[in-house]
Image 1 (cartoon, rainbow, N blue to C red):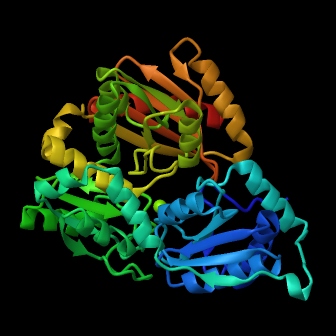
Image 2: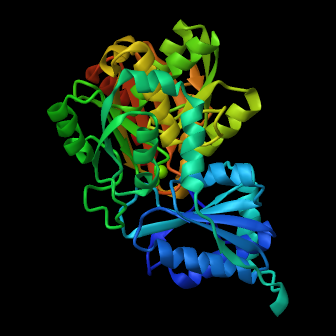
Length: 449
Ligand code: MG
């Protein structure tokens, strides 16, 4: 059977592996599986119209109806699906990938990313060409739906203390990377009474401003604009605006694990405790701060859908990833950048500047390495690594995470590439490097066997 869906949908280069013919057939499989009303939206990529049309044609050919929501952030589509009674949703996006890429991502009826077992059914239908093929008078229809962006931002505005935010009279700089966040975030800020200076907030599929991954290199203009204007905050999104990365009032780029910790700290204090869920790869600064406020951290495998589902199961108060993907359970069980910026503004309005809030967060250094590893050797290497570190404290949630006296290392094979990754964290660069060196030596020797 063909595996279509990776951790974030099907992705490929447009008109090569991501062709109209392919999208049409994936659409037929999705329409066959969902058997009802399906909402669809795109990010700002140039191939958005082409792929939305092809997937939609496939869906209606299988007898399902399509509600076309136009261009929206992924979490806005998810919010619509959760509240609309649709059977599911389809997002045409390649998130932060370069502009020549695009992808197809499925959303379950409750607005969460589609669980793997359902994706497998779609893959089976696709592989076996087991498509529904109704008679001429039973094919579906495509209807256009407007106004979804404003109902989404209204819900977010109501989910925070908007009067406090308005009173604070904040000025921020917003960089939407020419992505789908341009549709919702400027309006959200206006509705919150925040003055926004905008960069790259016109949707443009070639991403002319900068590549859409919110890395420090890509956000140099944002950092400069925050410094030049004396803004209280800089905000950046990735291409489909499920992630938010911040620049503080001093013009310093804030790594995602630190902003995650600032928000977690506030939410745990509000709740007088509670559980925060995050992947095993997240910095231990989160756990340190959450515990200080009588909360606890539960670790999952890497991947936002896994975090979201675990949060749902255990009734977590908050969750998220170190890449700026924050999940607010009262709002919805998926990463939501607009909700993240509204919450961050509320926290700043209530407690003071982000640079001050960050003083609570211990600094950690990260050391990342990868070693080439053939796919058929991955499981064996992992087994041997586990045995080697058996007498140490380990966490086997995803790969092998080993705790050293002064830090930790996470060793796990990549799910998509023939490589073995080693992430290490320590209180400073030298410590993180020592952890990384020790683990690399072990993995390298195993690979040479
Ligand atoms: Mg994204």
